[in-house]
Length: 243
Image (tube, helix red, strand yellow):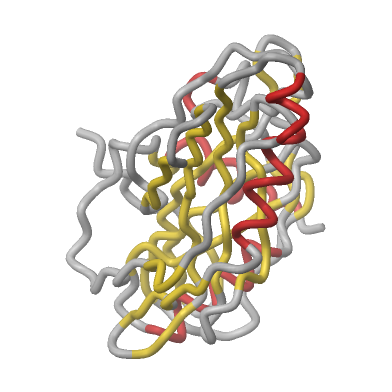
């Protein structure tokens, strides 16, 4: 790994990352978000009913490809494995309309929140990657945690990075998750002046890996929104627009 590339990547994360809810509005074309076409209900787990648990919560990030198929799922938060399994089984039967950029379909992620309550109809909502923070819950069976980027113990630095394969120039905003192993999951284009540039940067970020994100010393998931500036296929810093 070239030292100059590592320094550039670290500089990007310290100066360019955009906390969710504080992202800059760019002049570039924005992505038309993923939407749900058809869905089936997720069942309240019988095992939870038997032990007297009456509610649960699951939040899942899904990556939807150009054909509308789910190509990756990342459980961001869950109050128990039984609720997780019920939500994931339901998602397998859902149909999605892929995101669009400049009239063409592109891979993109969305966050699905499932609110389980005993003897009540399941409540769920789909959220674009930049919207509301996940509500933390208190049930203790096999919990999975999510932590906003600015609440981590420290910034997870990249330990493996790649640069774009092409020599395109321009800026694009990419959002992705870092899971509990430091892997990049469910990356998506938020805005880009060029369809090809957006796709190129998503393909680049997929190859990155990071230090494990920590909250109070424990591994967690987090979400990053990053504006990448490219010049002749080389990454450079860009303004974060947080003034």
